[in-house]
Amino acid sequence: MKITYIVPGFGGSFYCGNCLRDTAFSKALKAQGHDSVTLPLYLPHSIEEFAHQTDVPVFYGAVNIYLKQNFKLFRSMPKFLYKFFNSPFILKYAARKSGSTRAEGLEEMTISMLQGAEGFQKEELDQLIYFLKHHEKPDVVHLSNALLIGLAAKIREELKIPVFCTLQDEDVWINAMNEEYKPILWQLMSEKAKDVDAFIAVSKYFKGVMQTKMNIPDAKMHVIHLGVDPEMYTYHLPAQNPLAIGFLSRLNEENGLDILVDAFILLKKNASFDTLRLMLTGGKTADDSKFIQQQINKLKNNNVLQYVDFVDDFRTSVLNDFFNKLSVLSVPVIKGEAFGLYLLEALASGIPIVQPDIAAFPEIAATSKAGLVYYPNTAKTLSEKLTEVLSNQEHLNQMSRNGRKAIEEIFNLNKTTERLVEIYHHIINF
Image (cartoon, rainbow, N blue to C red; front, side, top):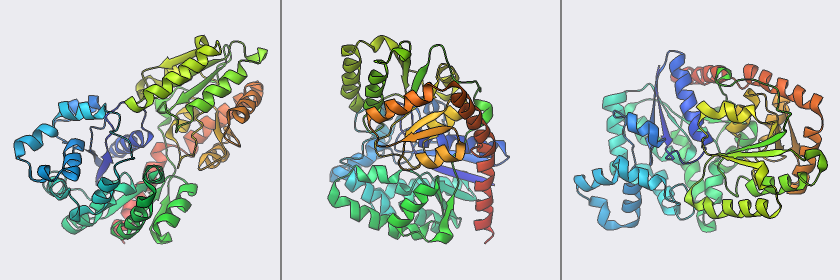
């Protein structure tokens, strides 16, 4: 089977779980004998990958669609200028700008993208369709998220193939937008849902969220948890000397970095945690620099900065060294998430998780039997839960073993990919 994934690129400047998920699925499909290719939209999937993908262009180049959306003059720009704005150099520059991955201010563009052929990006859609018809000729097209479903109608009409769509954290993007646009966007997404053959939610929790928001019928909804390849991660029991708490996600306020920093400061007041360390990785955008500096100042003022490590390299290929030094992982996302791939990466490495009791986190902790949840999502409550976990070596080790077992038996990328292919075949043969 030939499957084409269409994903929003992010430029590689921070840890993007959704992007890693898409790349992992594509690789797993290839490993199982399928022909799978990933097409990036807006920005390169990562700068490093873009430099080697000479045969796969970036569609809907971020600079071009921004200019077309906001300035009428650029809606009929000459080809040489269009190519310039879509060049690797310009996209690399755009990826490093603070607003390139920020939802606020992109309301009109999001509406235009959802409108598909009726939006300002009709030329980009035509280019994508041409590439799919004449270069890829896929059996299936899979959209990374529901914010891309404006593409579905034209793909189905022109290629006569089914279109699938993963559901993960679309609400986070829309909730960051101006209040007056939110009902418009949800209504538009509900209307466009009819153009998608099947939706794949990454958790039972998020299935419920999106069915309510988009009025998706049960017949179109499927739940497949995220998965990772166990062979990619080296299992070990949690570190003991010294104990260490890890954070793996974009270093920003939305992911609760300040909550973890405050909890760490509280823990360091306990003599039992005199050598406890905090390890932080996941990258950032320019938007996050001021916030990160505030956390550094806070740690410095409390005389614990020397116990904190900022790890710049968060590529999957080097994460084993990061996890090897951890006792537990906690990413106290303020509003929760539809899943959180970083949790599976930790469990695969034998590192238990401590997460707020919101969104999909309780589902993951209960299914894996390798984590604990706490409520409310405050530094005090988190510090108390971390104290409980780090003070019980036997329980910590048992959760470690449970987590690895869950990865091998439940959250195994090879098994979740097989389930996805079964859904593809079912829809194709229906």
